Length: 391
Ligand SMILES: *Cc1c(COP(=O)(O)O)cnc(C)c1O
Image (tube, rainbow, N blue to C red; front, side, top):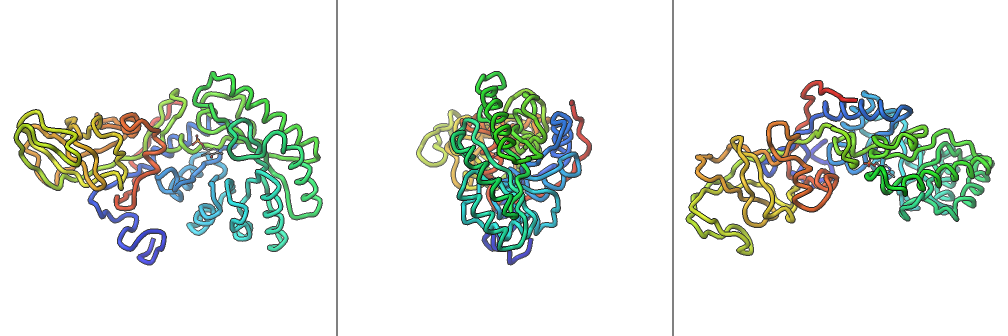
């Protein structure tokens, strides 16, 4: 990434720590997770690398997962797809969730397949195909119960008929049918069975309309791990690649470690208020260490009062409210000096807090923490070694 990269303000290039905090991305964790998910999927595995590979780096996660059993890539915007192509990633690549006026011409020139949730998108991608003299490979998207993306069950028959007519005109080829389950993190919820049935009916209706979709895909990470009868031809996994299991059933490997240097230490008497709003006062004389990471970087403000970090191998409570740029931790009598490094989160193997801990403290999901790491945090990508996979 060059100095003239326009996606980030000057001076906030990836890889250069501005705040002093450093995020280490361990690709061997992604590799091990991918191997496990590929073995569970059985058929194809699509690595969903949207939102910069869930904050882990889209191209790096894409390459690592492709080298470890993924057969295709998925993203939720044409621009993310084009960025992967620019980075030299050449695998089959699907983009869905696009606005109807997205850069479909560019997507087709870059050999990107497109998710189509309705008539307007079908017309837009067919027009792009006609303009670029290509045939667009389409995955028709059916809503099986989330009322989010995808055609509703009542629109589905009409969409299939329109897609078949577009196939006959020569610029469209329906290669897939996709759906998405909204409750797979609770594998026993009966809504999963209902969602699967709707999907099966939608595929049958597509076939009845004369379409021949080769790739049926419904399962994301949780269903890949817990609901084998939802796997069909391909599983689309994102969270699992980076060690997040929404179903809570499988030990995956977290890939991120966030380290922050101590920038200042002070000794304070009992009753000292720390940070904004006088939300906290020290109960006794103690020492406080200042770390240069705040809510602009990744630390959720909602974790104030619950969080701790690891410093010198010990748990040290975050005290006072989380600021935009910093947190303060109570280090007791430790003679910590500026420059020593605290672990804000990591895989948890050495007793440090995990992303899952931060998510719990903040009342949110791990997904929100890992996709919220700001541009001031320096980044380092490593391949720490072979991690065991318990398939
Ligand atoms: C993000 C996304 C996925 C991947 O889901 P995970 O639970 O992260 O594996 C799959 N399908 C769709 C439609 C998505 O938006």
